[in-house]
Image (cartoon, rainbow, N blue to C red; front, side, top):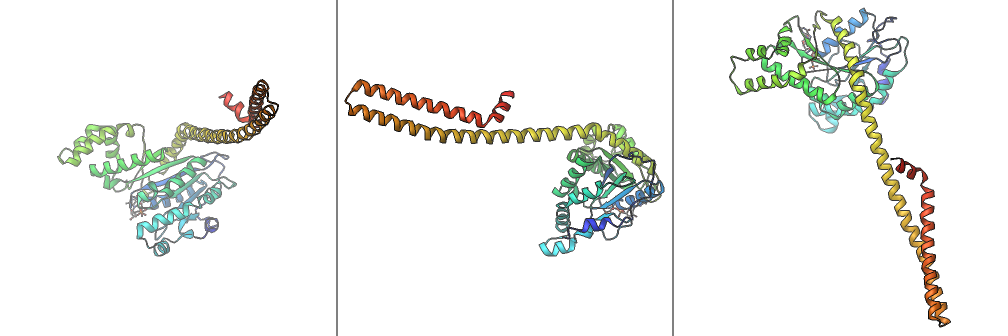
Amino acid sequence: MDAAAPMEAEQRTAGQASTSSSTAAGPSAKPIVVLVIGMAGSGKTTLIQRVNSHMHQQKLNGYIINLDPAVSHLPYGANIDIRDTVNYKNVMKQYGLGPNGGILTACNLFATRFDQVIQLVEKPRDPPLQYVFADTPGQIEIFTWSASGQLVTDLFASSMPTVVMYVIDTPRCTAPQTFMSNMLQAVSILYKTKLPMLLAFNKVDVSRHEFALEWMADFEAYSAALEADASYAATLSRSLSLVLEEFYDGMRCVGLSALTGEGMDELFKALGECVQEYQQFYVPELQAKQQRKEALEQKRREKEMAKLRADMAGKASLQEGGNAAGAAAAGVAGAAGRAAAGVQQEQLQQGLQEDEDAEESVDLNLSDDSIGSDTYEQEQ
Ligand SMILES: Nc1nc2c(ncn2[C@@H]2O[C@H](COP(=O)(O)OP(=O)(O)OP(=O)(O)O)[C@@H](O)[C@H]2O)c(=O)[nH]1
């Protein structure tokens, strides 16, 4: 893998729009990262192309990252392209993998350098970046259920406001069970990432998305659509629709057409709302997570310190105890030499007393050595 490639690829600024004083994210704000996820063929790449041209028109400062190593042609100029860094076909050959294994491994290799991508995105610019759109592999699970997808998502979300845009092929969703499959996929991504989500019903030029909004708002309407179907899958879909009511409630949805450009203004408005949700819910959760991690680390350090103290105390008391016992034995021998049983007893007592004194001084020394930790424990 070419480590310097993300840096070089970034020089190609085809995806950058021209300058603007009226920035949606604010002049000093961090860019909004949009992870574009969806089933194969839902129109992610075409949608990003449309978004790119919309950003140019609106003079929004955008940045595009392609994370799909297997895409053969990109209709937009990506600022960073995974294919400049890693060739998934070579990966397949080198590791003896099939296409999916090759794509997955290519993504994993790229993810190991993703801190460089974050650095590039965060690089100060004038005017600052407002939006970062990331195109993900068509095989949805390669991104959503892989270590690399998790890493990329976490790195973005812990550095910048991050939103998941789940792209849906609307014409295909007119079948109620395909609609349910899409919703379940979206829910699983929401659970996995815990990020604000936007449902983007694409291809509304072919089929309007209002039927989907109705199914989400009204269980009876969805149930009616399944009426003619008495199969087990249909019954399950009906039950799932009830379960998903909580998910549907308040979920942001936009109807888009990557082909005609319909819905672009609504998309950017919805992204702004998602950022508010990110600030309100995700950031406090992230902070709490970091605090829990720090507390665990602190506990681990304290435990190690206590173990070290115990080891040192054991060694020191053995050493001091041995010295004192030696002195006591010498005293006993001297007393025996003078043949005085009372004196012998006295010497023995004295020896034991010395032993006790020695132990006391060991304890004090240990306390001195570990003032910081002891103080912390007492405070706890
Ligand atoms: N009519 C119509 N067709 C669209 C629209 N968006 C995408 N398409 C078509 O849908 C097909 C798939 O589009 P892509 O952009 O390649 O979809 P993708 O999700 O990136 O596909 P993968 O890379 O396989 O994941 C193409 O033939 C596009 O021309 C749209 O809004 N309307």
